[in-house]
Image (cartoon, rainbow, N blue to C red; front, side, top):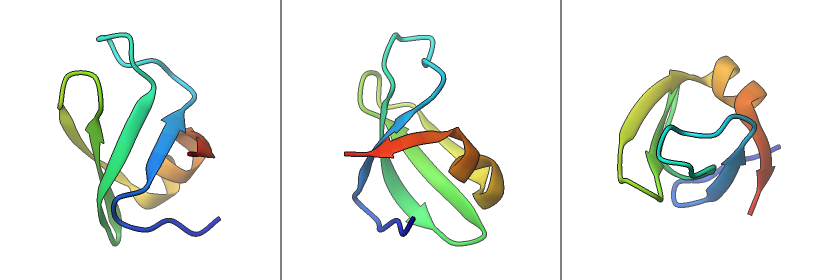
Amino acid sequence: MEYNVGDKVELKKEHPCGNRIWTIMRIGVDFKLKCEGCAHEIIIERQKATKMIRRKL
């Protein structure tokens, strides 16, 4: 699946704030994701991120 900056994605695992919806902030070797619930930002390896994503919204 192809991802673009600004896409909203649903992850398999819930964030501690209770939200599963994240926004893609940066794409490259790593993905930078921002939680829609609490605005927490994380950086994850591309391979790990693609496994964590359930669907693109």
